[in-house]
Image (cartoon, rainbow, N blue to C red; front, side, top):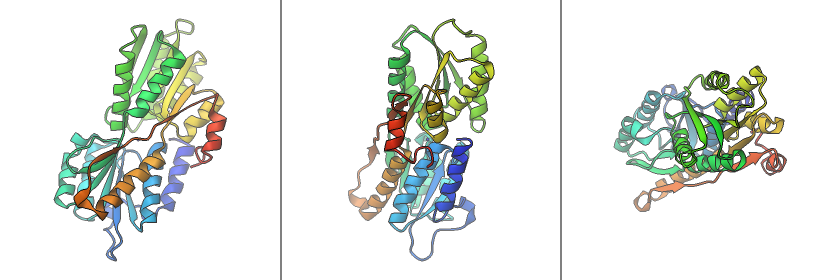
Length: 322
């Protein structure tokens, strides 16, 4: 739950997969090889790509094949992919990324009927889902770090996205926390997919018109990188250097923006580790379904700023070039 560098990275990832198809492109292996069907929110997004990379790593280590469907943010496409993975392709497991569990009932019912375990990235636990990753923690990490840096007086533009469950819960953390600070004037704009970067630019430009330079402390909070990158573009187009930008995910473009000073702070989410945890849960479940207990996988984020970006990149040398 990227433009430029991110698209290049995602393309390289797709080439590295043992199998990467849409649900209509074939069927699971007939030679006994297990298969996992990945239902991505936006496969070209940096964090989505990192999660897919983690799923693929564990899958290949265990001799599985990986099939990926890019839903481009469509709940309908996600349900359709899950149904096809459960019926026509008969996958051994399904990994669904960043959709709310209640919105996936058609897909989940199909998987349950076929006795196929589903692991979720950032979704809620529910009937048919054997494991999920935490969706709220990095949102809380982000708003806590923002307030420590920005303070509790001023105006904030929040670029939100409630269809994706990661951003939904990040938004819950943001809303619950800023509500405790009456000195903050928060404007919320909901972005769409596709068009998230352009939305970020348009909403920020409009917001800047009513928040002139020097009026008060100003900040933009992106519920993930791409709207924040759009906000940076709006600031550059307007010649504004008085607005601090905060984001979550920590894809290559956002990390480079931290290095360049155009993004103040990003919370990096270790999507690859989360993808590995999801896939390992599917492998472990199939080893012993009778004793499995549903679980949530919680991996904390890392707050990256100008003060620690060099050390962060030394610790995570692939972060700019995944």
